[in-house]
Image 1 (cartoon, helix red, strand yellow):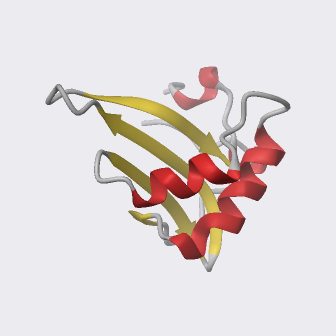
Image 2 (tube, one colour; image 1 turned 30 degrees about the horizontal axis):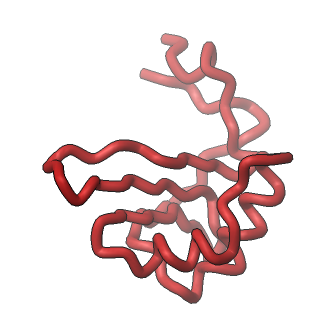
Length: 101
């Protein structure tokens, strides 16, 4: 079973839900904090929050955004691909510790 990273304690209750337009400012702040370049623009984020072929999820605990994920389905396919996964910088766990026994 994975052990939590010592600098990123796991919150007691995490809710995973579909993102809404009310989450837009927090998602934009997360994008700015996480990426120096190649960020989704305000316009693109707003589009994906409303798009029928996108599934935009947020992880929230105690009213705070912990991360978000976007999966996009092409209109000519039943397959979906992960477009973006962004945990908050303080919640990132090094890959080696995620799979430590």
